Amino acid sequence: MTAALRVFVVGGAISYRALFNWITPGMYVTTMLGSPLFQILFFVYLGRYAGTQDDDFFVVGNAIQIAAMSGIYGMTMGIANERQYGTLQPLLATPANRLAIFAGRALPFVANGLVVSAFGFAMSWLILDFRPAEGSVPSLVLAVTVTTGSCVALGMLIGSLGLRARDVFFGANLVYFLMLLVCGVNIANEDLPGWLGAIGRCLPLTHGIEAARELADGAALGDVAGLLWTEALIGLGYAAAAYVLFRVFEAEGRRRASLETY
Amino acid sequence: MTLRLFWIGWLFHLKNLTNSMFFVLVSVLQPVIFASIAFFMFESGNRTGTLLYAALGAGLMGIWSATLFGSGGAIQWQRWQGTLEILVGAPPPFLATLLPLTIATATIGIYSVVGTLAWGRLFFGTPLDFAHPLQVAIAIPATVLSLGALGLLLASTFILYRNANAFANLLEYPVWLATGLLVPLTFLPSWVGPIAWVLSPTWGMTAIREAALGGSAWVEIGMCIGLGIVYLALGSVALRNFERLARSRATLSLT
Image (tube, rainbow over all chains, first blue to last red; front, side):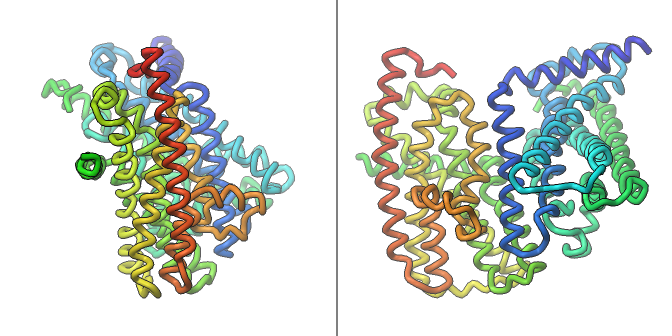
């Protein structure tokens, strides 16, 4: 148990720190804070022009969606980069608890997503006069945490595919942009064609964003509990699928001696 | 000789970029996704008659993204691939080898325009009745050439910034917004106007829309070409400076 806990904490921290081998602080600020801020502004202005929803709709949708950047790209890199940088074999040669390896990697990205999302909300408060209902901030934090965790789980799944796929970042990019379309970030789910809305409802973000919008409008946490539980369960589903895939690809890689071949 | 070099270089890079999954994403899939978002938003907001407007705007967004990521990282990529010294050391001026690359990055953006128009027509019933087809046929290449020249300026200045790719990430949304590709400039704060005027996508977008939706695009096409010449002049000066410094300090291949 102690060893698993150590792998969870230390392994997760080292894996996250390793990303900064090439992501410098300057790069972090421009990519994780600058670009998301402009994404919020872009969609708020597009929304004003289209005349569909008020600013708050786009602020909440995009301020939560930008957390997915950390969850999806970060987590994908956290797993798939092991193969790319040639550290997958030594990692899998250890007897370390795989669940601890996996979960340890996820935690920093949840925290990172929260920071990015908080920055998006704070800047919207400053620039776009976004004012959530009084007393709604703690509930919003909870909604963002659950949603970010769910996005990290999707990132885990894509990262696990990276143990086998040649170009996993193409998939990560595609999923990230598709989420802008189908997850109710900028278009209400009911305004999408049924089949597109159904895809959105099976993905992380959709229920979390819906809950966060209601909370920002003044709903009580109990009113959106169902949405948040659905979001959490979707995340758990993706995490479980990711873990199973990881173990299957690990076993396959060992059997065929193809862990790091492309 | 220079023309042949330009043609061969442009064709090579065009094929090379077309084979890159990243550029397929940036120049085809991403614009189609953004076009769909705009279509649905305009439909639910009852902004009728704006589907062609949105398709063209999303297409131009793709041209900008392809130019930004392709040209912004052009010199850095040559460094990573170990081809920068060979290109700088070759007899033709470095400008003559880099310009075809930056124009090729803008050219693959044409996939975006074709993609968003076809997507809009097939799935959203976007009318493709261009008011002045000849002007459209001139405005698109003029915009591409102008963005290619802007790409040269980006390539030669981004090199001073070690994390050029991150800087490119930062510039994608602001330029989409400031050049009125999907949101008219009248919806933005007035101080954005002067920024928009010095960016050729603004004029390229206006030219293509004027030509497609009715009106005269000649002035905007002229502005596009004029700005392209200015970018080319500034880019060549910056590039010469970079080359001179890199040679004298022996930092050509250092990342």
